[in-house]
Image (cartoon, helix red, strand yellow):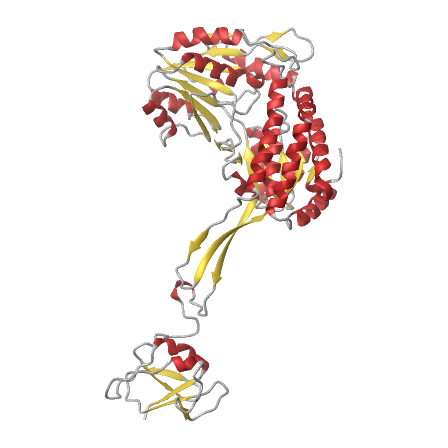
Length: 538
């Protein structure tokens, strides 16, 4: 199953130590070259995705394009790894935020997006200065091998920046438990995340989890139904229902429910299902027979609860496990709607009030993607506000699928809370350093502490210095002030020390007109501490 784990770690660590020393824009240039190589081999990579992941060829091409776009994004990002400069409360100081590379990033990807999810992680991790060990799905290891080959063609001495770890669950566990993995990014089911996360947490490691979704859409009375039906059909049936952003639950306002269902059923029935390499095909096969068995079990469990079930049957098409996407009409939010079945099943139910639909949408444990179809400004703003969708993705007049790389991708609750791709998702692949810079000659301590002095407020006070002790007293009549030179000479007055450029020449004691109640200026502290000044009470 490939190289030993320890060998992968050692090679990845060595690659990281070399790579992090490159200026970020130079790292970005390597990612640019990777993107150009992908452009040249886009067809080959897309064909490999369709062969292994069973996605229709147009979706596979779109996935490769997504990685290419990510390379462009990351190339620009390499010049924009911005930190902050913040004002300090101390004079002649400033605070600075600096972002540094983490180290080795472990990346676990799923079968349904065998290349794109790697691209999201690798492009960002690389420009941030990290190396990556990629654990692909056993269903799509050929995609990983081909992508690695393309990286190697442009990487020069940095080929080991990408290393592949093959295997099933045991390989994921090794990555999760290894303290050398600075960040573990894992994409997969909620069950997988709940198994992996404690292993990372046990070593106080970092994780980035992109887990399952149980996504919902709401259709309001003002919705453009032609647009809506198209968006719902693609979101529910695209990739044969095997996207983490697939639409699983649909809430339709009761006033338009019959109109929507009468348009939606024919839309589902008209889907062209078959060979994913055929460009006229819209829905390919499920990834495995086990996926169909899970779909069938969910539909069987719904038989006694649903008003009606449309589709869902297995199709007699050679070359894979083909099914007709299903619509399940229900009157209430049944138990089968609470968990994600990774297959094309769309539950549809009516609602009366928008707030009720939002509450039902948010009632599940997952929180990845959501959408609302409406032309009512107030409804869309409610949905996007703090009382609306609790998902990481909330769309208006577009389905739950089809996220763009410019925005951070990820969800809340059992979806894991991780963010990949755009916006400031790059920060997950770096560590933050806060630096305090002192460009002055004084050292004010935190919280106003004056280290080593019981009473350091010299202003307005007089002092008597004996052989080894400086004591503050009440105001005294001072008739003589003696200065001690830095070299230790004693007994000479200020006027006798001819050092016009010395520090303590600036520190002239003050007296009133009568020569009484002499006080020492605050800036004499340094001279007193150094023993350069002696005051006598005569």
